Picture 1 (cartoon, rainbow, N blue to C red):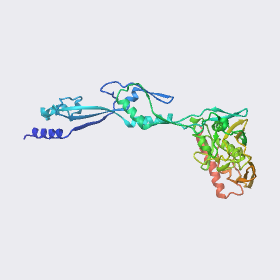
Picture 2: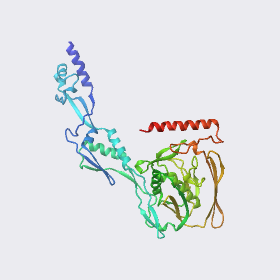
Picture 3: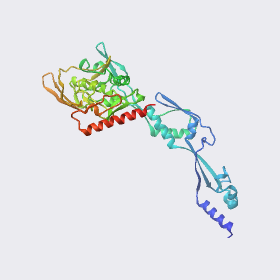
Length: 439
């Protein structure tokens, strides 16, 4: 057997014992489906939302795989001679006619599953939404709906992935595709709202944000609107953070100072604690059971009297309380001038609430202090329902310096030399950072 015969024998043996030779894994150049049929644009819809997927995007979702196959029924069909090992001339030279006449390059257009999945995940972020309970108001002594309930929506990713994979590899029967989604009904969606037992104000809380900068006032108004008209079911534990939702520019908030991890710095939503503090006071004076509340790190003038504030931050700390009344509670929130008021409407079951305090129990030269108040709630027969003591401990506000904020020039008598040294260093570092940031 000569050299050529030996080589041909090896190649023939290899080709005849291997069903498929994969010579190219992917061709990422945009291609069209069905051997040249053009990919048209697709319009997808999810509930009321519609979006057009361009032909350019659809083509990017496609990849082409090519295999060199051997079959007794094939004639020589090299769709692209570069797919022949080395070159077509080499194949003609190295393979006997009985074998080379059985070669065929088979191309297949497939969908890029990861690309389609990434598109759907991005779409889900646009259309998914939580259910929204109906909101109500009190007009002329009657409770009426002012914001209808809204179903929640969740995009069905697995089924829609299969739908789009099919659409990009097979010409669809329609250029419009309605994607699947699941709906979730809200917990509160009533037409006869006056049957909820809401008849009178059971408690109110107020606070004054006089002197607040513009961004803080804006954030207070945005957050207040989240709670106006909210209903709390009998026995339900209310979570302030749950109703608050996302706090960012997309949801209407502006940067403003917040107390966070030992510093006071600008962040979206600064001022929301004015709203949580006011809601806390309304819950206290309504005789509700408080299950979670935390005071601020240091005393803030907007929350006077000190000792009756409530700080919140997603996901915690949170303000939570239980509606321990026999009926629904309707929250009504309003702003008049710089005074924020939360009014809780419900059913007067005869309970009486007495709040003793808040009282400053300790005050330090650096502004640190402690405060306390007691909430006593009795039923219509005088039986005690709740007796809770709320203690608050505030650090010195000077330990949380920020540009434009108050500073000390003399060491407070209750500070050590080390504390004073660290404080001055913090002020120096802050001044350097501020100067560096200026254009």
